[in-house]
Amino acid sequence: MSLRIASYNTHKCVGTDGQRDPERVLSVINALSADVVALQEVDLRLGERPAALPAKLIEAETDFRPADLPRTGPESLGWHGQTVLVRRGTRILETEGIALPGLEPRGALRLTLARSGADPFVLIAAHLGLRRTDRRAQWARIARELGRDGPGPALAIGDFNEWSSKRGFEALTGLDIHAPGATYPSRAPLGRLDRLVTTPGLRVLRMGVFDSPLARRASDHLPIWADVEGLQV
Image (cartoon, rainbow, N blue to C red; front, side, top):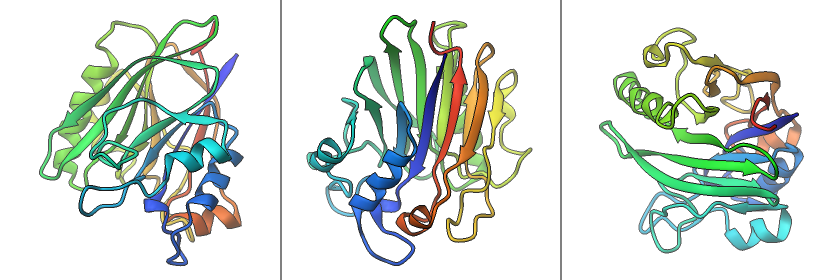
C-alpha cells in the first residue's frame, strides 16, 4: 500500500492574475487526491501575519484538517508561513517546529504520523532560503532530523528553492532526492524547486506535477505529489 504526499506553495493565495482567491487554492488541493499536503506561504507577510488561507474555509471545503503546529501569530495558520494538512483518518502523534539557520528567518515542521493499523513515520515540511549557503546549512539540520529516531521511515517535502539538480544537496548523502518536474513559475514552469527526499526503505511508486489551467492561475507554483510505498503496513 502507498500514501500520497503532496506539497504546494500557495503564494499567499494570490494567483498569477493578481487576485487573492483561497477557494481556488483549495480546489487545487482537493484535486491532488493526497493524504497529506505540506503547504507554504499560507499567511500574509506583514504585521502579525494573519492567515491568507482561512482554517474555517479548509474545514468547510475539504476533507483535511490543519495539524496542530506552532503558529507565527495569533491569527496565523502557519509557522514561518507553513502548515500541513492531514486527511481525516490519519493520526498525528507528535508535532514540532524547527528553526533553521540562515540570514532570513526560516523554519521546518516535523510531524510523526500514522494511518490506522500502520507504523508511524516522520514527515518534515520545509520552505528553504534563497541563498545556497543558507540552504546547505538548512539541509544539514533537516538531515539530522530525518535520522533522529533511528532508521525508521522518514521523508522531507516542500519548496526547496534550489534550481540546480546537483549542487546544494551535499548533506543528503545516503538519501534519495526526487524532483517530480518543473513547478515554477506556474504559467511556464522551468525550475524544479519543489521536491521530495526519502530515507532508505521508502519507494516512490509514482510522482508528478499537478498542472491544470486552474493551477496555473491559483499560485505562482504548481503542486507536486508522490505515491510513497513503505509508510504503511
